[in-house]
Structures are given as C-alpha cells and as structure tokens.
Image (cartoon, rainbow, N blue to C red; front, top):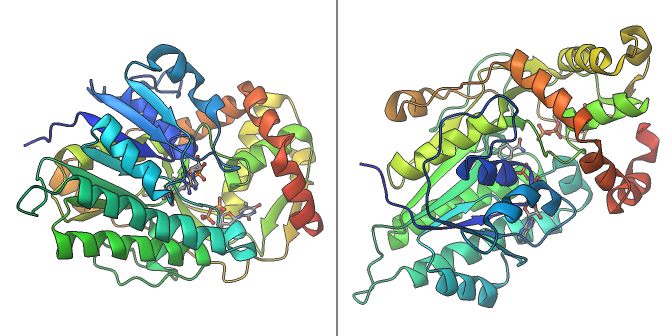
Length: 374
Ligand code: NAD
Ligand code: TYD
C-alpha cells in the first residue's frame, strides 16, 4: 500500500538532481515535451540547502514564484547544523525526508576531502539523529508512518572490469574520497534502521544527466566548452565507462520507492546505457555542433587528452532488476531523445550557465585546473 506523505523535507534541493525532483513533484518538469507521470503530490515541500558553489536558486525560480510560501518553503541551512534542523522538523512537522544534499564531485573530493566527510557523513548522521528523536513516540518506539529516504550512488560498489554488474548485495568497495563518504553515509542509514528501527529506504543510482547540472560534470562541461570554443578535457585515454540515466527517470524511481518501497530495503537504479567517455563525447559533439552551426571536424580538434584522475574507476554498471520487478519501475526517456533535449536545454539556458561560469567557479577552476586545458 502507498504511504501517505504530507510534509517532505528535501535536502540539497538547489542542486542538480534535487531541483529536478522538486520540479517533478510540483508537475513542472523542465524537460520540454516530456512531462512524465504526474507525481500526484499535494503536500508541502521544505527545501533545506546551504547553497554551496553547487546550489543555485535560479534553478527553482519558477517553483518559488508559483508555490513559494504556500506549498514550497526554502531554508538556507547546513544539514550539519543540528539546532536548525531540529527547528525545521518541528516548524513544518516533517514526516518524510528525501536526502539529496551532498558534496558530489569526485575531482573536488580528491583536492579537498574534508567537506565530503563533513556533509556526506556528519550531515547525514545529523539528519538521521534529529529524525529519530522527532519521530519517537512516548514508549520510545518510532512512528511507522514516516520515512527517511537516502539518495546514494553506484560508486559505493567500486570499479568493474569489462563484465559484470553491481547488484544490491554487491559488497561495498569505494575508491575515492567522494564514494567512501557516500558509502559511510549508506552504512549509517542502515545502522539507524537496524538499531533504532528508523523507517528508511535507500537508492544507489548511476550517472545522471539532464537540465540544471553544474558545469564541472562531464556533459554540461563539454556542451558549454563546445559552445564557447574551448578545449574538451578527456581524462586518460577516455576509455572509462559510465552508465547514464536521465535525471527524471531517476527521480521517478525515487518517488516510487518513497511511496511504495519496502522499509529497510535498498534499490539500485540504472540507465542500462553504458558509454565509453570518448564515444559519448563524439556523440555530444555531433549534437552540439548541429545545434550551434559549428563544423564537427573543427570541434573534434579541441579534444584534449589530459592527466588521468587518480584512482579513476574504470566502469560502473548497475543491475536494476529489483526495482523493475518489485516496484514496476521502468525508464521512459530514450538516450537519443534525452541527450538531444539536454544539449538543447544548456544552449537555450545560456544565462543559467553563464552566471555560474562568471562567478566563484571560474576562480576555482583557474586555480586548480589550469594545466588541464580548460
Ligand atoms: P549537486 O552537487 O548538484 O547538489 C548538491 C546540493 O547539496 C547543492 O545544492 C548544495 O548546495 C547542497 N549541499 C551541499 N552541502 C550541503 C550542506 N552541508 N547542507 C545543505 N546543503 C548542502 O549534487 P547532485 O548531482 O544533485 O547529487 C544529489 C545527490 O545524488 C547526492 O547525494 C549524490 O551523491 C547523489 N547522486 C548523484 C549522481 C549524479 O550523477 N549526479 C548519481 C548518483 C547519486
Ligand atoms: P563526472 O561527470 O565527474 O562523473 P563521475 O566521476 O561521478 O562518474 O565524470 C564522468 C566521466 O567523465 C568520468 O569517467 C570522468 C570523465 N571526465 C573527463 O574525462 N573529463 C572531464 O572534464 C570530466 C569532468 C570528467
């Protein structure tokens, strides 16, 4: 039976996946022509985000305009700030947490792991502990009409060779500071279920693509660099493999789990859509060149092979049989269509990307990446 959700606390709602999730919940999908199933949600959303470099309220302007102060509330708060998180649980009488907030970029985790441990491990712990206390009944047991859903990554499972897939029971083997911090948070979430009976669900997803992704990640970086005639930095030989899923397909899966998933269970979510980085880049060049009137041969010349990422995981691929068979989830967006829409979205929303490229991010890139030809 479906859960009845009223007041949802979304963390990290100003980031890539979180902002798309909020659009989805309010029936305002940003993917043109692809307004998928209605989420059928009529409750309240409280978006808690401390607006790191990756948080951008411009991504939520339409939501704020339409629902702000009515069914949508933004709180600029750090998830590690316990008194503030306690206040928010009380003030909005939170019954559901969907926890997206994280430091999310592998390269940054190599350059500065501390923020990853703080937000991803201690931040997740703080949210869990406040939820446990707020949802406790007089007899010390925890309400069963509440839920804490934790968003995680396939990177916790480590790196695959040419064959095989990560399943829900694949042992954790994280390699980067980012994936190790996410793996730690997954363990703390499961510990709160086993030890305190906190109703939780957990999902591990492959690489997302779509609108509102910060342009340090592969696809928006390449699209904006092609647009601007800049070099296209490929790590190593470009032969690493990622499995790509359209962000709204991920979010539909999360919503399904939050509504119908079994408490205490984890679900893998994947695109069943593996691409070698260099092959994907050629595809992106083709699509972006067509939209911008550039010549493919000219753009191809800007591909620059740069020093590989230390500990660069070779291949990620997910077996998502469980969510398909147990919850009836399936992907809706084809990669052809999704990639085309994504390229168009970044080119059309130049203001969104230009604001980011002209701010603190530019200084950070100049400081850390000059040798990589960006
Ligand atoms: P993102 O970096 O775009 O957004 C993260 C958001 O969290 C930002 O708005 C940021 O301001 C906020 N945030 C960071 N630290 C915070 C703190 N201490 N307190 C409050 N807010 C804070 O990330 P994303 O790509 O949207 O990823 C969202 C979640 O999905 C993460 O948990 C990530 O690990 C997971 N995930 C991402 C992918 C992917 O491909 N992007 C794949 C699988 C899982
Ligand atoms: P990224 O988008 O950072 O996601 P993740 O590391 O979490 O999978 O990178 C996707 C792939 O693209 C990864 O194999 C690293 C590679 N990559 C490049 O080759 N060049 C780049 O500039 C970036 C950002 C990534």
